[in-house]
Image 1 (cartoon, one colour):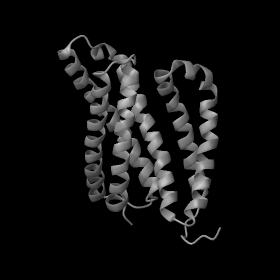
Image 2 (cartoon, helix red, strand yellow; image 1 turned 180 degrees about the horizontal axis):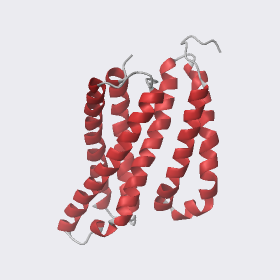
Image 3 (cartoon, helix red, strand yellow; image 1 turned 135 degrees about the vertical axis):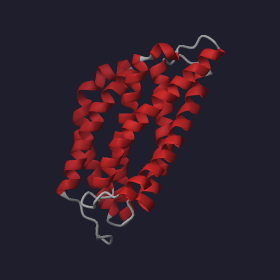
Image 4 (tube, helix red, strand yellow; image 1 turned 90 degrees about the vertical axis):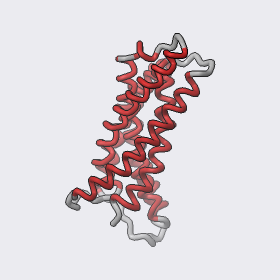
Length: 219
């Protein structure tokens, strides 16, 4: 396949891909245990090795496709980091939810309002931690600006984009959580939280990629 974009896949890309695969595999374990203990019991032992192999392989496939359309390769890297960040988000949220699950028990309308309030707070904490992780990976790999000196302007821009992404993330997560919580469901607090967080993360990631590429890390 003729490379018409000038993009290259480097040893650095493979190292980051392997590290991301390891991170994804490890973080997926507690999330999977919360979401489905039965599936966790069956597949936990293969999760980490699977992502250690699949992540660099997927990156290689994206590279071949990206030789014709450069942005595909960058989106693939952003997607890998996006998955890792989502799992950081979900993992922290699962831990907080388990520690404070008593606050999410629904016994009345007032309790429902209180549960949504606590969930929004928990989701905010998990998002902030995931966002710190996001800055490192996107600066040093997705947009490959590790050698570029961090400036106050870049930090402010990243913060501004992330705040909007944060609002989108938490809003969507909280709305989904409330919608499911108010319906007939047999899901526990941890599972409900994961569903809300996943929806919020997808919405936030779409905004963040556009903002980071066109503004924060614009070359």
